[in-house]
Length: 222
Image (cartoon, rainbow, N blue to C red; front, side, top):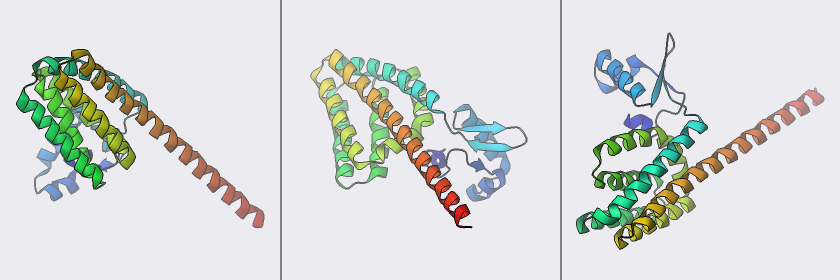
């Protein structure tokens, strides 16, 4: 799971049971069980007579998860504004301070780790275990999309500022402001995912056009 979430295995990659068993120093049985659990978690897909592959989540499904996350985070923000303790608020501020250090050093990987922890702690601090379990499953499925968003140093700074606004709203005790800050943060991430996908599609089309033009020139020369 860690290897998939870290991007070691790209979407669509086939996972070889024997190779993984050897790499992990276990028999094939535990690897087979891990595949089953990863399938249930939505991180891989199992195809009969073909094997196990890392899931390549379609955009429409990712956007559905963003919508659900926005509703969940809105509730979390509203709840934390009236229930957060001084110790919890201090912990969140420390995470944001650490994220700022990662931004300054342009350490996208460290920022990604801290960002995940920050949001996970927000949800966990709400005290709703069912919501926390559901949230964590959704975040795992969204992991590859979110890392693409965070890879840009400019976007890391933008996200950091949004985190600061979330902390400010929660710390003020204003439930509506906290709910709005949490909701808007997720929806901004949703829009950035759409924008990234559009840019990728354009780049693919441009590259394809360039290849076709090159082939046409080669045929003409021949």
